[in-house]
Each structure stands twice: as structure tokens, then as C-alpha cells.
Length: 325
Ligand SMILES: Cc1cc2nc3c(=O)[nH]c(=O)nc-3n(C[C@H](O)[C@H](O)[C@H](O)COP(=O)(O)O)c2cc1C
Image (cartoon, rainbow, N blue to C red; front, side, top):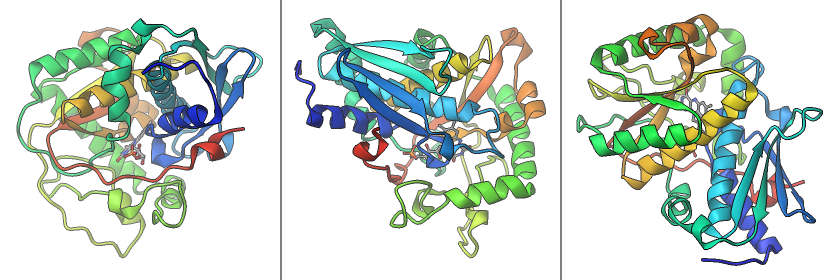
């Protein structure tokens, strides 16, 4: 599909694709603005949706925005433009996190990115359910490594022992988080029935805890008693993926978001479900310990869990026009 007309309907379509991206607690911490003269979409941080207790330096916010920027890039290419991306283009305006300029129509820009991934934007949701023991195929794992690398981010696929170590650190983080009042108050504010608001996580999208105590799923359900959700056994040997960067600056966090969404959409295309284990990254000492020294010096940004299982329930989004300045 190619078009060169950037009218209101097309703009709404592009931003709708962007806001379908994941964000921490579904805060949707982004704002969009069009500079019509240069056909550039600007993406700013919505600082009123910061998570001060759980994300004090805004790292998760940048990852979330990076994911939305990836979707925008895919949607722009799907429409036949060449998306020209700049991260943090203005040092005097740090909340301007990225710009995507819609450059001249180029048939080659609308190839794999556009046709393959655009459809997945609307299908992807986190699944917080147990997965089957079926392994993720080696070809897909290799594809995910390459996809992350194409965004400037490393993706590691830990073996059974390393995965066990990472889950142990995540369990420790989860234990700390559920006894930290500030973090609990903050999370509680973002778990909301879907009909109430277009932001936050509806209870239907939450999942059970692991009956074996092995898999440290974030215990959102403990936040809204009484919501008893029987625990269930999770897969014994989860397939984890670790996204890591050489540096730990805002641009690296944004790139992590680009890589994360690239990986999630490729997994979705292959019918592989995904969820995130972010708890240990939210505690600086545990985050440091997530590093595998065999990979050299790097900064772990996020853990992804991959596997086969039921679809996650959809989570609402604010309308594109409400995300637009
Ligand atoms: C940086 C980041 C961290 C996240 N951390 C977690 C997490 O630790 N546990 C979890 O269940 N979901 C986590 N999520 C997923 C969000 O809750 C989810 O994207 C949001 O609720 C929207 O739902 P959807 O992605 O299914 O559309 C995280 C998402 C992002 C972008």
C-alpha cells in the first residue's frame, strides 16, 4: 500500500498504531505532534504519567516511548513513506524523545517491516498465563537476536542455569516490591477496571501466580483484594530473553524500546506469546546482578518471557486524537 496524502485520517491511523505499543502499567506516557511543513511527527514524554516510585529515572518511560516509536515507524513504512528517525533531536528539550520524518514514498521502505509487522501491532498483547513446555524454535530465536541488534541492542537467550539465576533475582525483587508501600500505592493506582478509564491495567489482563513458586510473575492481583485468582503451575524451563545495552543513557533506553517492540512483533507473527519480567531491573543492586559477566560489560534493560499459550486479554488505549497535541 502506498499513499502520499497525509490527511487527518492517515495521521490518526499512524498514531493509533503507535499508541498500541506496550507501556509500563499501561501509563501510555507519550504525546504526539505533527510539524506539517516538514512532515515530521514529534514524540514527547507525558511527564504527568511518570512512575516516581517504580521508575524514578524514567528508564521504563523511555522504553515505553521507544516501543511506540517502533510502531509508528512500522505504520509509516506500511503507508509507503520512508520513516526517518531521530532520537533525542534537541538537547535543549529533553522531553522531545524522538522525531519521525515521513520522507518521500519509496517502494522498498514498504517491504518486510511494513507488511509483516504492521498486522501484528493489533494482535500483540502480553500473556500473563502459564505457557506450554514446547521450546521456541531456534530459527525464531536467531531472528530475535538479529532484530534486537538491528536496533543497536543485544539480546541474550540464557540457558537453563542462567535462567534459574535470573528468576531467583526477579523473585527477590518481587518480594521487595510487594512490601514497599510507595511502589504498591503507585501500582495500585494503575490497576483499574477497563470501563473506568483508557489507562492502566484491567483486572482481566492479569494472570495467576505460579503454584510451584518458581516463576515470579508480578503480583498485581494482591493489589486489589478481594480478587482471589487460583495459582497455577507455570512452565518449568521458561524461555527468557535478556535485552541489554553497552551504555545506560536515555538514548539506550529508547533503543531498548525499539528492540523490544521489534522482538515482540516478530514473536507475535510466529504465534509466540510474550510477557515481561521487569521487577529486578527496578532495584539497582539486583539490576547489576542480572548481568552475565560472560557477556562482557553491559546494562540489562528488560527480561522477556517467550512461549506458547493463550492470548493475553486486550488492554485499553486512549484514542489517538487524545494523544495528539
Ligand atoms: C518497560 C515496561 C515494563 C513492564 N513491566 C511489566 C512487568 O514487570 N510485569 C508485567 O506483567 N507487565 C509488564 N509490562 C507490560 C505492561 O503492563 C503492558 O504493556 C500494558 O499493561 C499494556 O498491555 P498490553 O501490552 O498487553 O497491550 C511492562 C511494559 C513495559 C513497556
